[in-house]
Image 1 (cartoon, rainbow over the protein chains, first blue to last red):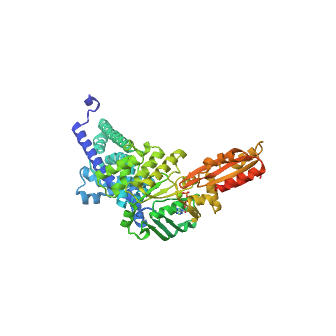
Image 2: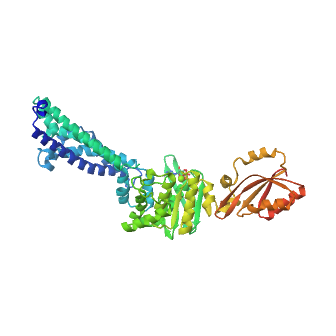
Image 3: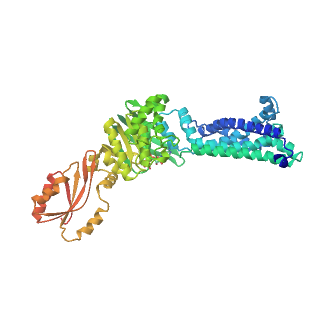
Length: 222
Length: 341
Ligand SMILES: Nc1ncnc2c1ncn2[C@@H]1O[C@H](COP(=O)(O)OP(=O)(O)OP(=O)(O)O)[C@@H](O)[C@H]1O
Ligand SMILES: [Mg+2]
C-alpha cells in the first residue's frame, strides 16, 4: 500500500531522518528552556523596580536578546559556523545544528519568559516578602511556579518553531527530515519523498502541540 | 509593642515629591487591636507597610517588639518578618498552590520540617474554619474563604503582630463581619497585637480598641474608639463617626415625621458606652405622664460598649417633658431637643 503511493521513499532513511529531527528538536528544546528561562529571569529581575534593578545588565541582556532574535535563522547558522566548529568539533551530523538552534531560540523564548514573569501579581511577591522570603525563595517558590503554565505554553510555541528550524539546519549537513525533503525529495524530483517527510514533520508538530496544551491546562489552576 | 517615632515617607515621582506619611508618632500596645482610618490616599497603606519595612521610612524609627526595624540586616529583617503576619485586600495567595500549601508556605520559609508543617497546617485550617478545603486551589474559593487562607497563612509562624491592609474591603458586609469576628477571636485566643487599616468606620467600631485617624499623611486624631466616637474633634473624624451612628437620611425622614400629628417634641439621645437603652424608655413611660414614639435609631456595639443615636418623639405637659429630659441626663445619656422645643 505505502509502496504504491510512496514508491521512492526509503523507509529506513525516513526512520533515521525522523530520529535525527527528534534528537535536534529535543536537545535544543531542553537547552532553550534552560538558557531562555535564565535570560528571561535576568531581563525581569534587572528591570526597573525589581529586586536586582540594574540598567547596565538589563541593557546588555536586552540588546543580546534583540539582536539574536532578529537575525534570520538561515543566516544565523552560517554566521555561527566557526563557533560551532569550535565547540562541537565538526559541522556534520545533528549535533552541529544545536548551537545555532539554541542561540536562535533561547532569546525568542527569553522574551516570553519575561512577559510571563511580568504577569505575576506584584501583591503575591510582596506577600512573600512580608513572610520573610529571600530572593532565592521568591524566584524558585513564587516566580517560577506561578508562571509555569505560561512558561510551558511558551516552550510549546518555541518547540514548534524549533522543528521548522531543524528543517533549515539541513543545509549545513545536519540531517533530519528537512534535509531529506530537500535533497532526496526536491533535488531528485521525488515528490513522494517530500510529501512523506512533510507528513512526519506535521505529525511531530501536532504531537508537540497536543502535549504542550495538555500540560499547560493541567498546570493552570487560575 | 510597636512604636513609631517621627515617621516620614517621601516618594519621588515625575510630578515631584509626594509626602505619603508625614511625621507620624504612634504607640501600639501589646494585645490591642489598633485601627487606622482615613480616606483613599491618606497614606494608610504606606504607613502599615513601613511596620515590616516593605517600605523604608525616609526618616524616623519603627520599633517593633523591641527591635529597631530600620537598622536590621537583610537576614535579621527576614527573620523578624517571620514574626509579623500580614493580610491583604486582594488576599495575594499563590494560585499555583493548594490551600494547604499556601498555608505551609511561610513555614517552608521558616525552615519547619515537613512533619511539623503538616501538623501546624491542620491546626490552622481548623482555626480559620476551612476544614475539608485543604486540597482546593484559591480559584475554587470565595473571597471570604480566600481571606481565611490569608489569615491562616499570616498566623502560621505564631507571629506577635498581625498587619491587615484593608483586609475586608473586597468582601460583602456579611463576610466582612465573619472575618472581623475571626480576627477578634484570634486576638483574644492568641493575645495577638493587630494593626488594621480601613476606610470603613464600621470595621473600627466593631473590633478596634484604639483608633488613629489619618489625613494627608498625618495622624489628626487618636484615642480609645469610644472616646473618639463620643467627642470627635476633627471634622473628618465626625464624618467617619456619622457613618456608623446616624441612620442614613436622618433629617429628611424625620422632617417628614414632624409634620404628622401626635408628635410634639423630638429628642435625639446619644448613648455612649452604656447599655441603658434596654430600660430607659420603659422607665420614662412608667414614671412620667408622657407618650413616647421611637422614630429612628442606630445603636452599635463597640469593643468597649454601645454607641449610637436614638430619635424619639415625645408628647405631654411641659413640666413632665422637663422632668423627662432631666431623667435622661441623669442616666449619662446625652440629649438634644431637635424639634418642638
Ligand atoms: N510607590 C509610590 N510612588 C509614588 N507615590 C506613592 C507610592 N505609593 C504611594 N504613593 C502616594 O502616597 C500617598 C498615600 O498612598 P497610600 O497608598 O498609602 O494611601 P492609602 O491611604 O492606603 O489609600 P487607599 O485607601 O486608596 O489604599 C498617595 O498620594 C500615593 O499617590
Ligand atoms: Mg491602601
